[in-house]
Image (cartoon, rainbow, N blue to C red):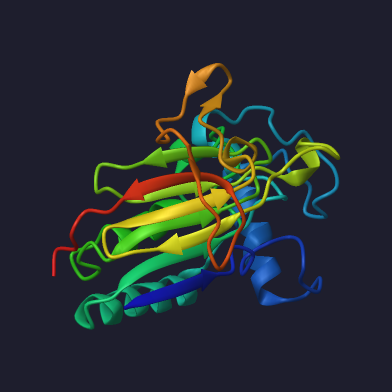
Amino acid sequence: GWRVVVLDPYQLALIGHAQDDPRRLAAVELLRRKNPGVHPSGSGGAWFEGVRGYDRRFVPYNGGLGEEQLRWLRSELAAASAAGERVIVLCHVILEPRACGGSTMAWDYEEALEAVRSGEAGGCVAAVLCGHDHSGKYHCDDAGVHHCTFSSPLNKGDEGCAFGVVHVFADAIEIRGPRVDDALPIVRGGKPTGRPAARRCAADAFSGECESVRLPLRPAAR
């Protein structure tokens, strides 16, 4: 069977919370330590002055999962593994730096990836599906987890087709759409993302004639 785990990457954030909400106050303190160029209001300051590499993620338009949600994630993955289920993780903000431009990850993405790759998870996670980075990107990590960052329709204009359907099978995940490259690019910035090539596929009960990308799955550890 399959389990879909949906994460809220703005549990800790400057946006979406009242000024005195403990989750917002925790975000203010985190950014004060990690990126002093961010004003506590989230609307001012020099956000990228003096921050380098993946620390560029500590800006107001990103957020964090928080320890409570991370504990829940670890519990869900352990339960899925014990039940012999495969898991798809949904999270708007990205968990894998190589699946984006390197600055649009969750503040605590490292802890989330540790949970995904943990022994308790047992390799049950098949894919992590995200958005947020409007250009989109794809990365398959060393454990065989497919990190899919879907492009924003805003970037494709009126003629774009940045949408599709996800099919799951015992040995693969299939992404179908009118133009798969519009939704999940095979090239970004002139460089291949590593995404498998698309092929034409016939209509079925869920979608008309379209393109398809098949992402093969490794067997789970247990």
